[in-house]
Length: 314
Image (cartoon, rainbow, N blue to C red; front, top):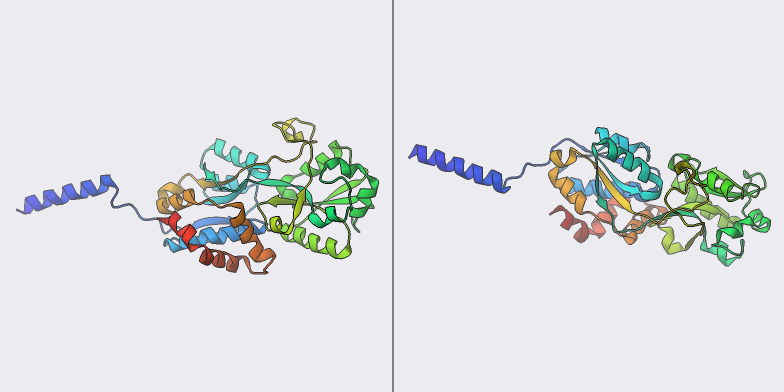
């Protein structure tokens, strides 16, 4: 009888193991989530981290360079990336994939555009007639309406941090023959871009800033400048003349290849996760409009959208 019981136990164990009824639990090793220097990315980090924590996982947040983070994921110093913007970070992302150790983990529903543009009120006040066509920027009468104390009498383009795009926008200004009228300056982060929108409106002057969609500015009204169409190889770094605008693109997710082994449940939930433009705009708006901290914004978004994200954890 004892031998029979032992044999039956062995059979049951084998069936359970091979049918997947008993899955290995996620490791207690923390999931390392990077934070960068724009609002939606930081809030989304806390949203995703909160989702992982609801599943019993440990989470840590680390500041990370938005270009170098893909190499950090590839070698295992960081676990995931949740906002891979095609135009700005696509090359770094693909380079890490090609080396091995980083996996493309799917894309969000939201399409993207990352480009220079102006708030709607600049167009309404006709501070640069002809916008959004880029050729309106050839006018000296236009450029003077965008001059600032640090622009040397020229109109100013306020780019994001130089770590985002390097000299991409300066290359474009020069390639389009706009260098005599416009200069490119760099913001320290997204907060500086949004502060510029407020300051320019208060001062009644024009402003050209780097922006993206999805973002909270979608609701406020923002007009992207229409530059020559993007095509493969058109940027100077790719052998082109540098005149082209940015492509409309995807917003992807990435993981370290071992994540599926160490945290299979979290990896599955992250694979299912997909945010719309409205979701991402809401996350940014909680901070940039409502004044919440990024951590509190993440908690509020999770509380307000429980029926959405909980199904990803099942």
